[in-house]
Length: 433
Image (tube, rainbow, N blue to C red; front, top):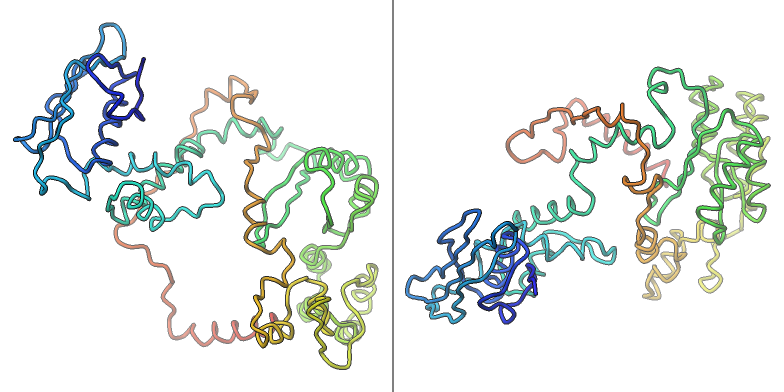
């Protein structure tokens, strides 16, 4: 039987064969870590590999030879009994390299339930093997394990030239000769971060193109519960969603609507009023901002009102909370399905967990479920059809040297800028509140 690096000491005896020299090195390093001893290499060559206990008075030793015309290594001598002194036994070992530790944590790194940090790795090695390792060694182990799963940045950078033909954008695109429309769908996870769902390329933006695109999207992700589409104000997009996802809601994205206003050369004063009107929850506040807009620019007002508002309601007399129904007279609670400031005050008074009143999409469990599967929008690299002319191109990442010393986390703010930034933050807080 051919042994590998996960073999136990009980399995190893004279005549045992390992698949390669590296397996012997990792195997006995793991054994030394678990049994709290250190060894030294007596001889290491392409044909021989011999080990001895660090304590010269101890008889523990291993001697191996490479089998002729193969990569296999055979155990020709092994003494398993240790006669080490207590002082030789160590909890912090030189055999516990960051590369070896990466093998212990690679499964944790693949599992979205674990948050693999240096502190986690340090605690895990202490729990598994009673081993004390430093913070930097744990950090290096995480980087090595990540590279084994996702590849190194240098390796991924070299794939760029092969990636372009796969997504049907060849060198003509770089020369601005490509004529077409790139359609991209993104979603938001529970942490409010964007991630791509699908993309497609069509000759132009028309009803047929969007119907085809949303059909492909439905084939890929199916029909999800409470699916909501937000997009630019484009009739072809609305047509495609209505045809393929008639059960879903389609709304106008505030960001794209603001970009449209910028293209129409709308004054910055109106942009700010629009932002305020788009983020309120009560009809009275919305009408107040829109009345200011119509006074300044009637055309902009008419353009915005082409899509009537759907997130505003009539204002209640007082802010009454109903935690059972999850409603508030400010309407934020029922619209965003997150506790508003009034609900939070009521929840705190009753010493209840605020997370009990959040929609489950906002919870950590839902965020983890979003990323529990790997997404391969263009398939595995083995399935790529890449022209030979592209394969021959060698793409190297740009030269970059990491400056010495600890990285500065925050930019030093001169005294002259401090007052300006404070004022800007005050404005932002006013907008957010």
